[in-house]
Length: 72
Image 1 (tube, rainbow, N blue to C red):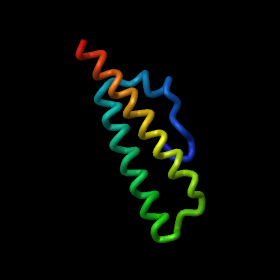
Image 2: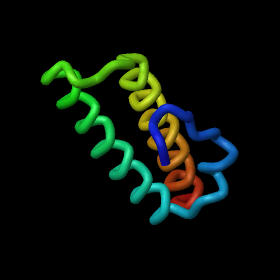
Image 3: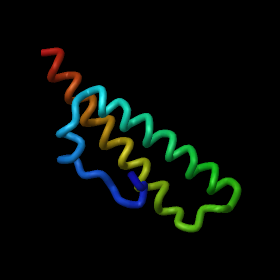
Image 4: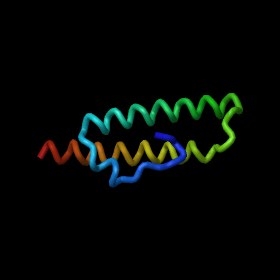
Protein backbone atom coordinates (compact mmCIF):
# COMPACT_ATOMS: atom_id res chain seq x y z
CA UNK A 1 0.00 0.00 0.00
CA UNK A 2 1.23 3.44 -0.77
CA UNK A 3 0.85 5.97 1.97
CA UNK A 4 -0.33 8.69 -0.42
CA UNK A 5 -3.63 6.86 -0.98
CA UNK A 6 -5.67 6.55 2.19
CA UNK A 7 -7.26 3.24 3.04
CA UNK A 8 -11.00 3.39 3.20
CA UNK A 9 -12.74 2.16 6.32
CA UNK A 10 -14.82 -0.25 4.24
CA UNK A 11 -11.63 -1.92 2.98
CA UNK A 12 -10.34 -2.31 6.52
CA UNK A 13 -13.63 -3.63 7.91
CA UNK A 14 -13.44 -6.53 5.47
CA UNK A 15 -10.28 -7.83 7.14
CA UNK A 16 -10.02 -10.07 10.18
CA UNK A 17 -8.23 -9.15 13.42
CA UNK A 18 -4.89 -10.71 12.45
CA UNK A 19 -4.85 -8.92 9.10
CA UNK A 20 -5.70 -5.62 10.79
CA UNK A 21 -2.87 -6.05 13.29
CA UNK A 22 -0.49 -6.71 10.40
CA UNK A 23 -1.83 -3.64 8.58
CA UNK A 24 -1.26 -1.44 11.66
CA UNK A 25 2.33 -2.69 11.97
CA UNK A 26 3.00 -1.98 8.29
CA UNK A 27 1.51 1.51 8.61
CA UNK A 28 3.63 2.23 11.69
CA UNK A 29 6.79 1.16 9.84
CA UNK A 30 5.86 3.30 6.85
CA UNK A 31 5.17 6.28 9.12
CA UNK A 32 8.56 5.82 10.79
CA UNK A 33 10.25 5.77 7.39
CA UNK A 34 8.46 8.98 6.43
CA UNK A 35 9.55 10.65 9.66
CA UNK A 36 13.16 9.68 8.98
CA UNK A 37 12.90 11.07 5.46
CA UNK A 38 11.54 14.32 6.89
CA UNK A 39 14.37 14.50 9.44
CA UNK A 40 16.99 14.09 6.71
CA UNK A 41 15.11 16.55 4.47
CA UNK A 42 14.44 13.94 1.79
CA UNK A 43 10.65 14.13 2.06
CA UNK A 44 9.12 16.38 -0.59
CA UNK A 45 5.45 16.04 0.32
CA UNK A 46 5.04 16.39 4.08
CA UNK A 47 1.28 15.91 3.78
CA UNK A 48 1.94 12.17 3.53
CA UNK A 49 2.77 12.21 7.25
CA UNK A 50 -0.75 13.41 8.03
CA UNK A 51 -2.29 10.78 5.75
CA UNK A 52 -0.18 8.08 7.40
CA UNK A 53 -1.21 9.14 10.91
CA UNK A 54 -4.86 9.11 9.96
CA UNK A 55 -4.57 5.71 8.28
CA UNK A 56 -3.01 4.34 11.47
CA UNK A 57 -5.79 5.84 13.59
CA UNK A 58 -8.46 4.47 11.24
CA UNK A 59 -6.97 0.97 11.33
CA UNK A 60 -6.54 1.02 15.11
CA UNK A 61 -10.12 2.18 15.61
CA UNK A 62 -11.55 -0.61 13.47
CA UNK A 63 -9.25 -3.13 15.17
CA UNK A 64 -10.49 -2.04 18.59
CA UNK A 65 -14.11 -2.29 17.43
CA UNK A 66 -13.56 -5.80 16.12
CA UNK A 67 -11.82 -6.90 19.33
CA UNK A 68 -14.64 -5.41 21.42
CA UNK A 69 -17.24 -7.16 19.27
CA UNK A 70 -15.43 -10.48 19.63
CA UNK A 71 -15.28 -10.07 23.42
CA UNK A 72 -19.06 -9.78 23.71
